[in-house]
Image 1 (cartoon, one colour):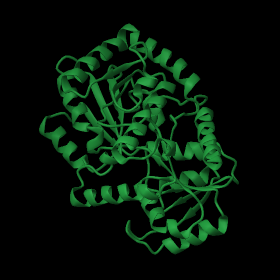
Image 2 (image 1 turned 60 degrees about the vertical axis):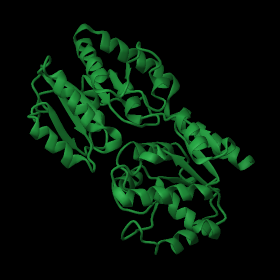
Image 3 (image 1 turned 180 degrees about the horizontal axis):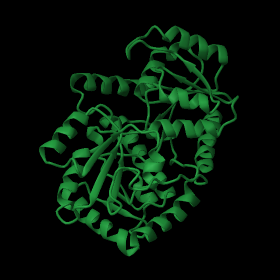
Image 4 (image 1 turned 120 degrees about the horizontal axis):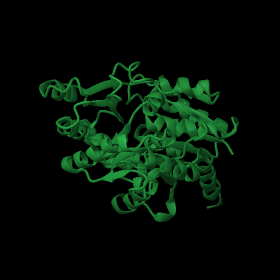
Length: 367
């Protein structure tokens, strides 16, 4: 078995970690990572000694790479081409007729939200992504809700869909920063939010919550780790509402795991998710979690014994964060986090994740 994994190459968040974690569990002769842009993903893959190939595009709609892509796939006789993300899937749709390898694609996010707030360009990209589904031989989805979505919204037969849940290595530990090292007072309560600053992550929902919370807890600090198309809008809101002391935009960071383990709480306010890796990373760090009720998060946090799952409502999130802040002093938050660690580490290991994908490859070959 030999698999070509294709991605745009501009991933830096959960998608990148999902792909690299998966590929790291396969024998080096079994997988190749192909990308269309140079960036962090390519660099990290090479550091892991994963075989890589760059089909460099000058811009997203540069189709000059397609002949080289066809030649590479046919020369290597891949068992599958496994795409991740709309660009890779669309490019494969254009050359499906010219290759012999079946196409699998992983649906990492709700396709309806992939191009939010991008105007006409976003609508065109969504339409092309939807069209590309017609040539995909099998879909891998990372939540049961996405399986339902693909069947109901896009009329994909159930037999062409396999569901897996993310997994991570729970056997690694990260050294926390002191709050003083991070530029905060030692009495500060640090809430980490690791997410792209984009509409689907609802950053303003988190900031408006902080605006309410600091009326009672002036020592709360929200660390927003990531960047995106909403950055300017978010910066404007923070300045306009005098929140610069309480909301800190840290941008893209290479030390995300250390920032998580250094935090008192982790927050996720997304409109849509699958089974977010960052929640598993917080579970590993034994940091209490507050998350909106999206995707399959309730499979990770099945009850209030493990964390807080809340509706996408400002008042509801504010109330829960108030509770969570109090839990940082009375020990109940750490108790939840410890129970979550024990639960998550037993069910969502990296080996279980990669074994599930390998089984999909075997099953699809049989079909």
